[in-house]
Amino acid sequence: MRNNFGVKIWVVVLSLVGSISSLAEDSDLQSSIPFFSEPSLTPKWLGEDQGGAEGFHRIADFELIDQNGHLVGRESLRGKLYLANFFFTTCPGICSTMTGNLKRVQAAFKGNEEIKILSHSVTPDYDSVSLLKEYEAKHGISGDIWHLLTGEKESIYSLARDSYFADDAGSPIENVGESFLHTEKVFLIDRLGRIRGVYNGVMTVDMKRIIDDVKTLLEEH
Image 1 (cartoon, rainbow, N blue to C red):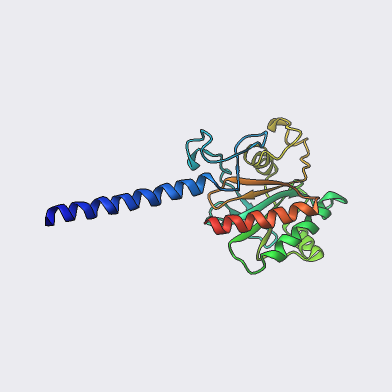
Image 2 (image 1 turned 90 degrees about the horizontal axis):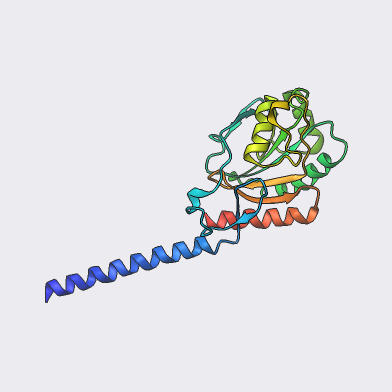
């Protein structure tokens, strides 16, 4: 009797474990936030023959310098969600609009150390650390959450094209010295370096989408 009772207990325990695992998998499959893994930026969800979460594209390792002269890269962003866009300090039009819009996101997550914003300069030879610092002051950017990045042009353009799929022109990387990258896209990157959202940075309505999606990912984790 005792042995049979012990066996029954283990069967119940194993059944509960299986049920919990199944629920976890179902929760992943029902996530409202997709993944983006190739240049067409077509959204895909878990369960679409990607080999699970490990099958999705990730941002390559990088190391750039921000407006405070600090190194910023995948390692310093480990465990954080972040938004990424591309701009230049002398841009008279859409860059200022994107910056103004992203300030809404900055305000929404003020004091939240899990969220960062990365703005990569597409004219890094001109946009020095001191100029980025001036841009920060001019536009009311908080260096605690928002990093304005400069570095080697080839590194930034390679990151934009190969990791973020940001370059609409798609010009060969061999011509990076003569090329110019201009995009309105803003990307949401999860804690594991995967693209989870693509937005139009000049559209105010997309800032609400960003804020909602960030909150969703925070809850999922």
